[in-house]
Length: 420
Image 1 (tube, rainbow, N blue to C red):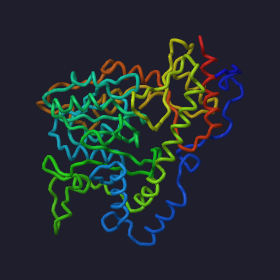
Image 2 (cartoon, rainbow, N blue to C red):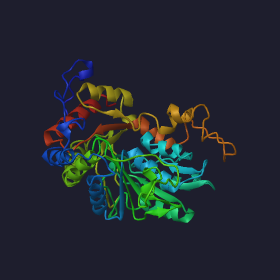
Image 3 (cartoon, rainbow, N blue to C red):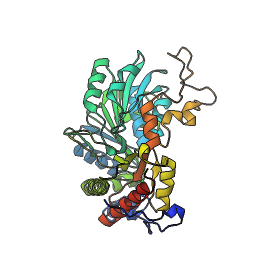
């Protein structure tokens, strides 16, 4: 893509993008309309907004499970709640270990800690920034109970070898699909390959209910507990009377959220196709930019572009990533430095300083624990490098061809200005 190197906006030049692009923050970037309004109106007119007495949550669960061709779906209040429900179902002992990715949202790690388990960070494959199967076995110990696999940016992790390792070591696999709705791994949908799949319907996701989540599985009972009870106070509601079989929170979805979700499910294909087409166009526009490297997708897989993500080849540029981000922002392009930021999760203060339950440092400082847990630079070198070099573009289904051309022009202008 030939780019005329004009004066950068950050240096006083004219910015490339002079009007707001569609955004997930409002209707400009979201497929929300009459279908949702009709179903929400039904709920309001019924007078029943609660999961316990209504019909919409059950319908949403059924439709989502059918879409994924899986037996059970339970709707919850958020993506984090979905992962916590899965962890409650697994029922680890305090000090047990769950393998996690360092490139994910804190919502992937919070459920591990709330169940008194230890998140053990596994380095990533720089190609797609997902958990590297080759790095897993070195992190397995006698206390390892499971693997939480995050499919980041809508690109699938390499589930074949991950599942082989899990079977070899009898580990429970939770797929974090918050960013990977309808993502395909070699003919299968992400979320249907491990033991449990967890989804988020937060405002930015491929479909949204504002907040909300879903847990899907082909099993309903294991580890001495039923999946549906794990988000419902351990309450066996299929029996008469009140009882509580184990400790669990209340993560109910409302009928209003479910009504929106039922309408949104019907728009999956529109959203996914639009995101893929916009991403393919940007790939093509910037294919000749040597300092630009889109995050990869494994062979025989299809990603769904929660974000459009690329790495900078900094050795070809006269600027670091932070400078590039500032220059792109000045050109009118919303973007972020790295994910979950310029550093991986374990270098955030909450993890590094063990700010969990009061001043206890629990469960990291659990008496009789397997080891002393320290989280310092160098723990996952590939993840740290990826965070330093990665640029994140929020993506949505309302991006049109002219929008993508402006995005490409802004990136090309900045990269050419800082080219060595």
